[in-house]
Image 1 (cartoon, rainbow over the protein chains, first blue to last red):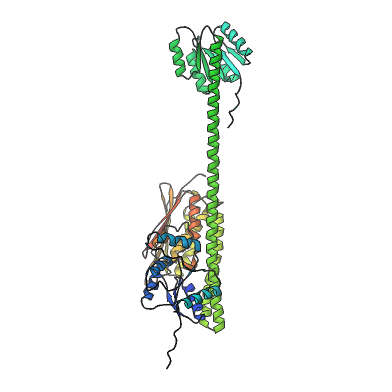
Image 2: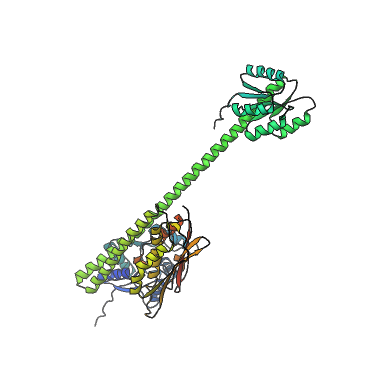
Length: 139
Length: 384
């Protein structure tokens, strides 16, 4: 019997329940499997068991925010190749500045995130971004 | 900067000897000065006040008010006036004393016209220098005032800029929520998925609530620029909040208590604005229980009004979720919302502005998981 090909997995790290539901619906509509985490800590915890093909990351979250999560991902050789889609209400410029500030304390710079999508962006746009990331991660 | 004009060319001459007065008058008038005369210190002072000359020439030894005393009085009335002393032989001590009292120069009797000319030139130079310094100082003062005004204006612009940035952020978030919810609803319709429809609808309702609240917050914020201060009982806004919130408290199983203050003193305040601040704080306290899942947890909010040292204190104490560290620092100004889709980040900023307009302060203590205490302190003003 041929093995059933697994769907790509997308880890959603977002603290607002309703936004999480929206992202889940959106990921499902692409035919991917969503995995949900309600904050940075839970998100990083999930990564210990599951390797997603893409991560959707909110920035303003309680406990561990998106920037910190991204920093940890980028520094970990196991995770740094997983594409990240930032999805946030924070201005991109402000976020880039924040990443630069975080970099000041590090030996190696963290690259500016490649994909950054505002929370009020069109769902189709977000879908395209997720698709691009998932296809990038497939070897 | 141009020096100011030389001013008037009036000279007052005070001498008890009529001959000297006459000679000086003729000499100076021929040099183009307007000269007035006085025979003694007393008449000299009257003439000085009437004619307001720039320059005074006075004998040092006179009956009645002597020259030194006259000099002192002139300097106390109009310090910028220059005074030349006329001294006799052997008046050196007096002459030196007069210089200590800021005389411009002294000339000795018999008066040599060259000495007189040089003394007058010296005095006029001093007048000019004083005028220039004064004009520099005035200009400097005006410059400082103008810069201050500009700084104030730019501060205002910064605040307006922040307000607009905050508004734009809040609206962007709502737009994001609405787009998300319509996507979920579309998916629900497409796949005939009731769960999607239900969730999408909830999400849309939350965002409608949010935009309604934002418009109210903005309205309140706009109102803070024109408060209406009236004499009020400090307990009044707190009692209004109790009336307004008691049903919701019952519904949410929260024990909401008011401890009014005992003072009968009335204070000047905008009751409606204070009402809005308290409503904001009490609503925040209500929201702090949103994460409570234990049905046996005793949810408590105390609203306390106190009068101490002519200050009114409003305290709102809850035993809810508290505020976490990173948010704590900026809750009053950065449009920070701790409440996910529910908050707009405008409420506390507006409250702070209202309290500041009352020349008061707002502060808080909070511990995550234990609760929060917000304290408003406003001076009790019994007069406008």
